[in-house]
Image (cartoon, rainbow, N blue to C red; front, side, top):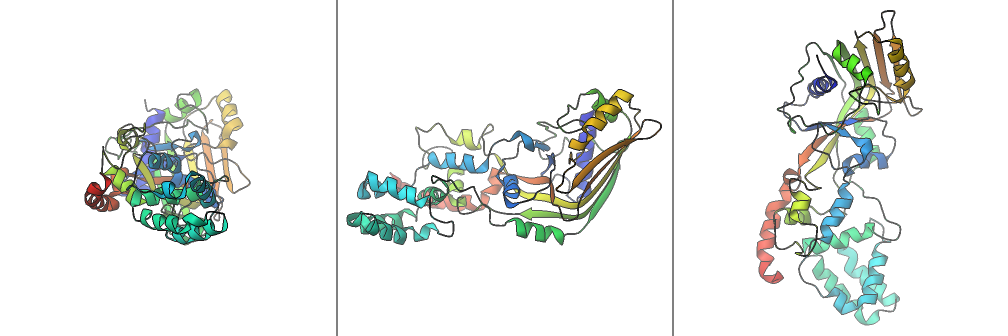
Length: 389
């Protein structure tokens, strides 16, 4: 008898194919799939480290790219520098606090000149030139430059991590994207996910409605009988954005390409293994997000639901039902469930044409994410090994 997991896996395969992804692509479904209404919500998808799973249970939180990257930088050391020694501890602390107030339009290449002006006007005249010269040397080292760049995000009023493309670019691309449609039946769907990018691993997923268990009576009744899904989207797009200046691919590549020794601080509890290893917190990333608008999903079930089951479904359908769990919201999504005289269920899920919905992400392993920087980092590390010693 088919299980809810079989149904979930079969829909995953049908959705991947329906969206035009080639076999073996690293597509991960996002559940639930609420409207994306602003830039913060959009960037949160890129900031979430994807689990090793076909489904990302996004309401559970999880590892955050920015926080994990910040921890990584604390465990790295760049080329030796004498900035704090030359300017003094008090000046160094005051300068670091000031950097946290600088707008993101300021780049680290401007730090030497900015430090010189700041020191001359804040009582550190005697170290203005020396500190500026030290900073000019420090920004040539990828690790030190990365540690300087992130200071702008760590002030007394921390700045959230940003990406290079924002909400306007996202909605503009989605509004001009092509349409997609597909249909699938549980009687013919392929539930074999052993050849997927994560070998079928599922960390968590809902049951028939949002926050329900896949082993509930209603979920089992639904999955055990025939189910058909007709899906259409007015627009479907794959949207790409890269991290802002808080992130350095060179620093990350340097760290990834060395499992021990420089640039790692030997006494730090954060190591290559805890970061990039099999249990590490930065093993993979969301390189793209898959977004749709104008969604129309019709789910029909031939199962016979009891009166108690029908009542439970009616009471919970507004919070979202399988497969996208989009709730009834003023922001443009709606889910309804109805039953015919034979107690068979029909679910309709819709979203407005002007409302973006993220239904998944493309997952890439860390080796791919930093690959373009790794070779350069190796060359740099080889060239500076003697200097670091």
